[in-house]
Length: 130
Image (cartoon, rainbow, N blue to C red):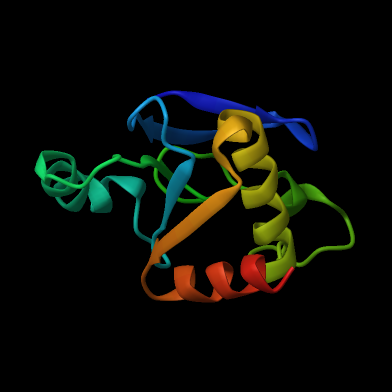
């Protein structure tokens, strides 16, 4: 599983997978999983989508937020002024997502579609609001 190093948290690489689309596609589909679910949750849907006749095929990004799947806990957990388990806010998670997209797919982020469930929907709304 590839990892991306976010400049804001170089000590905690984020696990992600970027499924290639058509070379000319500028559309990025970002899968935002629910609380406690790893990015592998999306694999069956992605496999079906890749077999479809949709054209051009978008690029698809899945990732494990800090503390889920193959990503370590958020480094904020060790900050002295944070309560354990409550170290990152929805804004922090949205900042992490923005940084991840810029790190792994900066050339395909002009058009983004979110595929989400559970808390992923709240992250998508916060991202879009910004």
